[in-house]
Image (cartoon, rainbow, N blue to C red):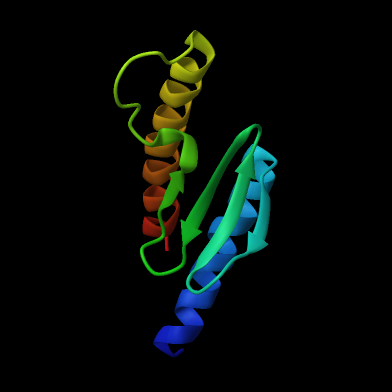
Length: 94
């Protein structure tokens, strides 16, 4: 199996996992990324690095953020960290 074929299989495995376990909506994005929506969180999954980043996990600078915005930030950071660990574990099983 070529490196590219392995990458395609691993990418499919992660996407299937996200859909099954998190009811994620996954759409092919630009370049090497997929757009991912889980609940109210929007982000991207990298085909190259096999990691997820959420837009809502960008550091909140300054003051004036609402409690909901701060809570969403913390949720996004927590989910991002746990998903990236789960993806690493999922791919280690092979």
